[in-house]
Length: 196
Image (cartoon, rainbow, N blue to C red; front, side, top):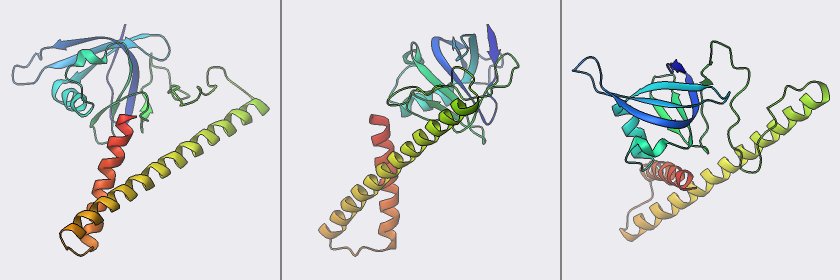
């Protein structure tokens, strides 16, 4: 089994098989979680994640225990700033995939796509490579369009809520209200995305 450390700007996709609490050797430090699973290339991989960071991420997903990770695919991402993200199948990592076995990763791990998986399994050349690239571009554009539509919907909902609340209290719609709309729209969009 390969043990890896997720560095800043990297992520690791695992089908989690086991989660184990590991006490720190230093008594003044918090415990860690050893997460073991199968990586995209079929290899067995383990990594360690700090208790506080993992529990914060699980709380954001409405999960109470790290054991709830077992049996599913998860992406463990360390942002460029060093923060931990735990991403589900619908979430997209914004970092590079952690190289396994010392080999560079030439392509991203195939993440589930709403309709069907993209054809990344075999190397392609010539016209086939152009067809794959065109398909990938089309899928990306469709995703961008869906995100844009979701955000526009969330802004419309937030604007409607704020307008109604201000009107019910006889308060003028000002630039401060626009800030409230933006903040509420972000909350609505995130809540909607996580509930899908």
